[in-house]
Image (cartoon, rainbow, N blue to C red; front, side, top):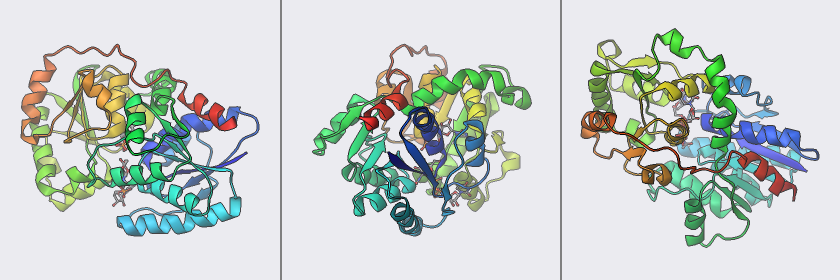
Length: 356
Ligand code: UD1
Ligand code: UDP
């Protein structure tokens, strides 16, 4: 059986690492990896291949940057060429990025069945490029691996019932597999000079926060208020760096401790020891829960409702309240005991199902 896997953005390398490892252990499957090039800086791409031992991509299409149409269109064109050449039995896509949609659409148009990992997530906000990508991908997929029952229900509401399975979340597999390794291998806390539970970890990259000047400046002003009181460590996504430069943000006057994007092991180490995580990332919200750290999510909604229902993830839609909410949440206790995202066997279940 031949599978072509399409990946391109940081979270997809982490998701694919667990499934690719399960595929490599299974006789009878050959995986061909295609990197679209959507993320291309070495600390946004190569570092994950090295650390997570993902095989070197068979194809790197080198399509990074550009507008949505330009990026997705070029990917569609180039992925189609790869698929015509490789003629796989399945095309495997992850999540909700432009690489996901381009991979799914290229395959579906030429009648190669699409397997979508992380199917069924919905924010119900169609302005998000990710919401458009995931809905379109789900509707042209032949096998849909959903991480939660809520995701399964979302698919049912859209009339998608066949070959839909809740296998749990591949990112939970990754958190379990790399969690201990991160503690043993990462020196990031020592290098930065912080003690465990003595700092806040923040990430910001979502288009709705970076492309809107008011939201961007509000977030960074509120994070700065926290940073005057507590160390705030912020690995800066290239999109956000560009946005802050556009706004002529004065980094030298900020109390936030900016660092370049870090590899996954350092990120997990930083997450595990943070006293609070403040983020707009999908993956980081869940990892906060996996590592028992309370989370504040800087968005109007989330796809990961289970973490909110468990009381451990707080949606902060009023950005002016970030600092006040941080102060009140810092005094609260949280219960992380519910298992929300499977048993850590997601990747194995995906491969077993495909073999059947
Ligand atoms: C993309 C995904 C988003 C995901 C995020 C993960 C889409 C529509 N968005 O957003 O769902 O949460 O990845 O991080 O697919 N850039 C660099 N170097 C890099 C990567 C990006 O300079 O290594 C620059 C690009 O040139 C571009 C900007 O950052 O100007 C945004 O990159 P892009 O991949 O288009 O979107 P993300 O915001 O990263
Ligand atoms: N991540 C990382 N280094 C960083 C920031 C994030 O390894 O500097 C990891 C993080 O642990 C998570 C994933 O990248 O596994 C989340 O990616 P991102 O926030 O870019 O995208 P999203 O999950 O929102 O799509």
